[in-house]
Amino acid sequence: MAGAEEAPLHGSADALDPGQAPAEGKGAAVLGGRQDDQPVGRALQAAAALPGGGLPRLPRPEPPADVSRRRAGGRAGSGRLREETPVRGGADRLQLDRPAQIHHRGPAQGHPNPLPEAQTPADRSGADRPLPPDRLSDDPRDEPPLHRLVPRGEAQMKKRLQVLVAFDIGVIKPRGYGYEEEFKGPAFATERDVLRAIRDNGWEARTVGIHNDIRVLIEEVAERRPDVIFNLVEVFDNKTYLDKNVAAILEMLGIPYTGASSEALFLCNNKGLFKKVLRYHRLRGPRFQTFMRGHRVWLPKVLTLPCVVKPLCEEASRGISEASVVDNEAAFIERVRFLHEQMNSDAIAEEYVEGRELYVTVLGADRLVVFPPREFKFGKRPEDEPRIATYKAKWDEGYRKRWGIDSVSAGKLPNGAWERVQETCKRAYRALNLRSYARFDIRLTPSGQVVILEPNVNPCLAEEDEVGLAALKGGLPYDRLIRRIVSLALTRGGPAKKRRRAA
Image (cartoon, rainbow, N blue to C red; front, top):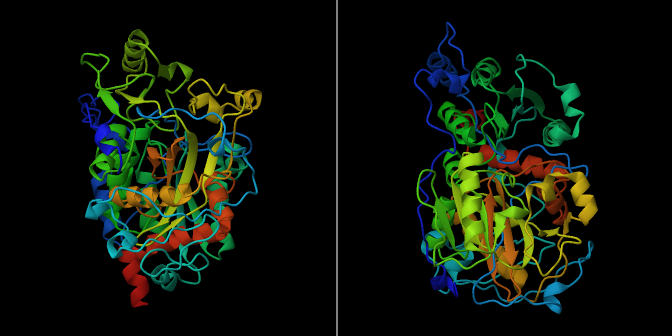
C-alpha cells in the first residue's frame, strides 16, 4: 500500500484484559460466583456428551443503546495522515444525499504486492472486479449472488430449526423466563428484532439471558439441544472483555453459533494487536503507541499531533470524549494517565486522521459480500476542528439532536473510492480471520486513502442499526439477513451440522 512505510509500528500491544488478575479464591466468580453441588466442569462435560454437542459462542461487541430509535453501534477513531492536507470543498465534501447511489466503477487500488494471507480470490487470480454499492458480485471466484443463501448452510436447515438466542442481561433471571417486558424497550432492540426474524423464518426460538453464571446456558443446551445458537452475548458479569471467554466455552461444546470466534474477539478487542496484524498485511491504519498501566508515559517523537487517546480494550466509544483529542504534550500525558488512573485501563494513542467516517459491513465466510456504506455525519461540529465519534455523539440523544449528529446512508464518494473501500475491507476481514459478519469503521481521507480505524467483529444487529440498514440498502431484507447469518453458522458448525447431514 502506498505510503505504508510511513506508518511503522511502535509500542507494545501486550495488554490482555483491562481488569486486574483475579484475587485468590475468586476463580469461581467468573462462572457465577457460587459453588453448587454440581461443579461447572461436570455440567460442561454433560452438555458436551449430548448427541447435539454443546453451546455456541458470543458475538456482538456493542452494548444496548437508546439512540434515535435504534442502537447505533460503532467505535470512534480518527486520524490525519502526515502527508495530507485537508480539503475544504470540492468533490470530497459533497453534501450527503440519502437516496443517492454510487456509480463510480474505477479500478480498485491497494498494495501492489499484498501478502497471500490478505489477498482476495480476485487478487490471486489477477482479476479486478469492483462492485457498485447497490448490488453484489456474481463472480463464482469471489462473492455470491445477493438473493440466495450459502448453499451448504441452506441445505442443512430443517423445516423447524431449533434456535437458541443467547444474550447478556444486567440481572439474574431464572431459566425459562420470557423477557417479554424487557424486549419492549429500546435497550433490547437487537434481541427483539432477531427473535422476530427467527420466528418469521419459520423456526422455533427460545431465549436465555446470561448475567454472571454460565451454567444457565449450559443447562439450557443440555435440556433443549438446539440446532444452532444465535449469540448476542457481549458482556459477562458486567465485564466486556469476558465475551471471548464465554465464546471459548461455547466452542468447547460444539453446537454451531453465529458471530465471531473467541480468537477474533480476543484479537479485535485489543486495538494494539489488530493494528499490528493489519500492518503486517500492508493495510493502512493510523500510527499508534500503546501505554500499559504502571509504565512511563511520554509523547513519542514518531507521533504527529493531534492524537486521539483511547482505552486499549474498550468498546462502543467508552472512554472517548472531546478531551480524548490532544494537541500538546501536557494534554497527551494527562489523558493517558486519566485512563490509567480513573478508568483502570491501558491506553492507546493514535494519530488523528482527517476525512469522512464510514461504516462498512462485510458478510460471509469463504465468499464475501460488502454492503453499501453508512456515514457518520457530525452535523454542526466545526469542520476546522478534529471531529470524532465520542461516546456522547453515539449514545446521548439530546447531544445528538443539539449538534445535528446522525448516521445515514453514505453520499456520493470520489471516483474509484468505493472500489478501494470494498477491497480494503475484504482484505482486512480475511487478514483478521473473521467469519459470519463484521463492520469496519474507516476514514476516507481527502486524498482518497482508505484508513481502517477499527473492526467491529460482532456489531449490533437491530433492524434499524448500521448493519441492518446497510443490508437493506444492498437489497437484502432483515429477515433474510438473519437467515443468511444462521446459514453461515450451520455451514461451519460442529456436531449439529453432522446430525442434519445424516438426516
